[in-house]
Image (cartoon, rainbow, N blue to C red):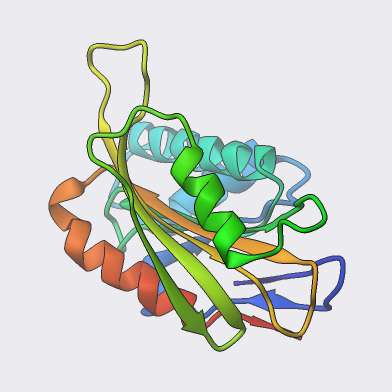
Length: 197
């Protein structure tokens, strides 16, 4: 999964078992048509048009969400002929001068006012591209709906050594909380592969 940034030519991550991922074309001129084509490729001919349409609607929704966050790149984890399990995306963070610092990132994360099912877990880690703050959180997908689902996620806030005064966010989210441990490990595995050139 690769895309361009403002200060680098390429920002990329390696996705384990790439056959289980759908890399989203965030620049598609017709997102709905692209999503329907991806759905047909993913589900195969065994599934009827109704399944294709429903799956394509999910993909289009994820594409719109990634574009709304100005993601550089995004992919959906969906083992062949299975529904979407998780979404991962990378975006550049634009911070105020003096905010490109792990301590300040931690302070900001701790002060976020959001409904959480438990306090977020914050740890620092050194990735090959630079130091990062890792956040693990569980939160409802809606604060106004009694039927809200639990969303679990891992976010990495990364300060690339090679590009001072820049920051990236790698975010992976899912609602299959029973897979939390495995998906946390997968997010960590992907984060280790992030590179800039």
